[in-house]
Image 1 (cartoon, one colour):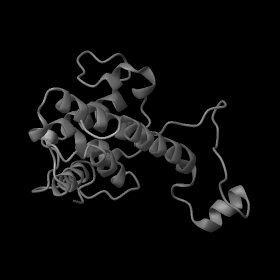
Image 2: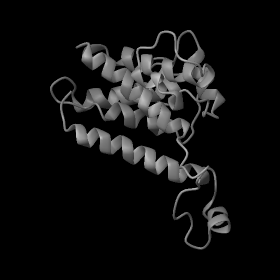
Image 3: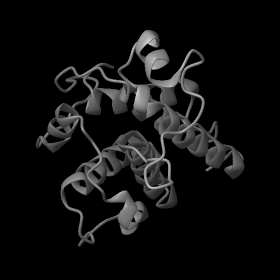
Image 4: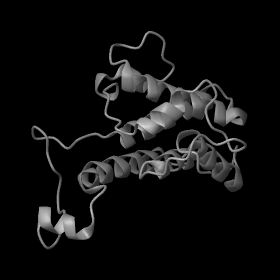
Length: 184
């Protein structure tokens, strides 16, 4: 994989930090946010037991990246969609089966805190549970939520001119959204 590893870590950390801070106001209007947090809105984290929450969106991005890394380490970048699908399926299983995974190709699944059922988006989980999940040719049932872009962003981090054109990475991001949310 090309690029600077620090950039990838920075992108994932930025996604996790923004997600941990913003998830509590996800579905609120500006007026509701001001009512809950004051005239300047949300200025920090809502802590749970002294910690910021790791949400389903962060988990989803980590599994997508891990699935794509599996493909890259196997030298199979031509079938990135297959490894994108692998990461998505393993993430979906992690939302229901919280014990140690019996067979997992994603190292993220070995981390207990990455196997917690944190996803409240049942429609997305249902889309991923189907025998045949969405594709660009036949997207899954439409489900537009804030996590829609999470799938595309995680795929976009894997752009590398040595094995993927900008158009190719755009297509991979669109495939991710077609698989999870049905809106390429």
